[in-house]
Length: 470
Image 1: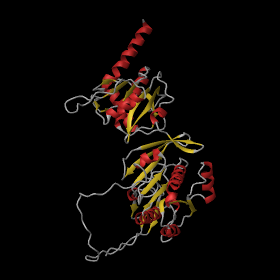
Image 2: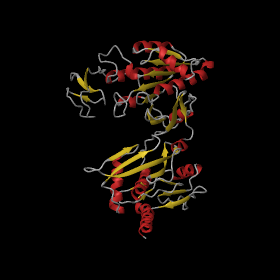
Image 3: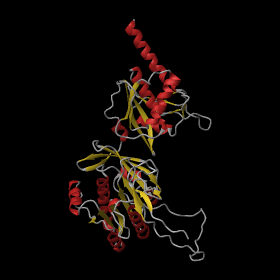
Image 4: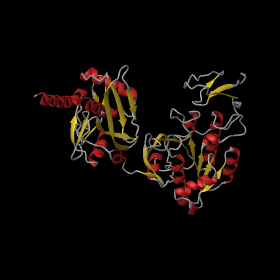
């Protein structure tokens, strides 16, 4: 039998190494390897267990019941509310609002469930009880029937939860502060986070209550601790946004009971996080339609259509390598789009510094934003503004072709609802032998190549030069 050897585990990504080294080969972090003893492996013998029953796919199982949080945007991200006996992981930068939104949700759930005898428990490992009470007083939640405790020893927390027969929800803030005395490593290490999370999830599954774990993030924006933690839970939610910005985006990157990439939009106020029912109007609130270098993108986040403004600025490079600065979009995709505009449309952009920004703090990941980014870049290069009542969406290929994207009708309906009158999009495919009519009041400009997007801006710029010289 092979002898178990001590291994060295990276505290950033959870990768294991046979010996210590200064740099982790998996994530590239320096001085993050920590020595850990391997967990004992149980011996498995044939015939020692009981038979597992196998059933067919067909069955009559009701959908899992939900616990509404009382916050519509949070329920949207969760897929309709919390599922009993489930585990949810919430991550985000320090001060982004994780503890605030969970305290608000826990208080509202406690008020809704208290008449039936169900309890909601909040365990804080970072703050004392009085600190949590001060936050609840500031948020106007001091009267909620919420069970509050401050503890970091997992053995004590587990023993208390074993005795709670009526618990419906347990919030752990945060998983990095808990420690298990059976392990020699310090709190927050990979072994401690993994073991503590596994025990809490086991309790949630056996006792039937939902558990919400708060997780810290690394400087790269990923959840601290092993990636296996994300595989252990049923849903993983990330808080996005800047602490200096009043708006927060809660995004589901994993959800076994709902749609992934679903977002909820909140605004940070003195009364806590307030949900924003119409994010499109929020993101376009300060938009000016007569400025070059701006275009409105009709996007889809999960199941929700969202309109955001894409802003581009081109400036002559001072020398050396031109700068490419991107906020809210993929920098590699921007470089690809600039190359397509130069190679397929004859635009000279390589000597300029390029700055691209997604207004409102939203991060866009879908390739459908290519056409809106291209429109903003061409508008900035020609110094001609885009049409104020026009939205853009479509994927751009390396040969310059504009490709189809999903849910075009939902994007157009959202644009029509907010008063936009035109849309530039790829050619739509006919369904069942007929073209789907656009929403009333929207005129469509279907283009098959990015050169068709550049041509109107170039003609306007040419006429402007002729008027100046003539």
